[in-house]
Length: 200
Image 1 (cartoon, rainbow, N blue to C red):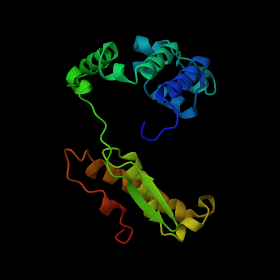
Image 2: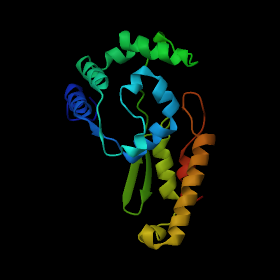
Image 3: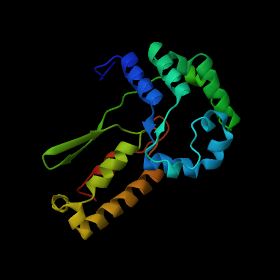
């Protein structure tokens, strides 16, 4: 509603069509399936996906009719079913079975809070991303904040020094993400110093 150009129902219909036709299994998804093989093989909802020996099936189409139905339902009722109704009950019961304290009231009261965007200027470009509690955008900005502008003029594949600097940026960013980034409703961490290039 705020930033999209297509109605949610159409976006969901396209996604549902894709997963019904089958989405090619990516190398990363296959690797994740291998990591969680024990869990995938004992859960009825996932065994139907046939992700046994996933790493040997990269590129094969993975179909999920149940997910397609769910996506269409969310698109039809504008996602209300995710927060209230049978789907919400399933979400809560599965979460609580795994030790969560999530309740139906938690889901029903959920509201999106739109905070001020995070931005970083790099030369003539301004990179903008979502603020905490989302941590991925801040991490990405930190990774590109550490190298100097002159470093970024060299192609990565031709610069061992730049590869090293970016590697250290990733390590440093993940450390800050774990130690300093949290939900502003519960933490007082200010992400702006993490992006101050004059102090890096």
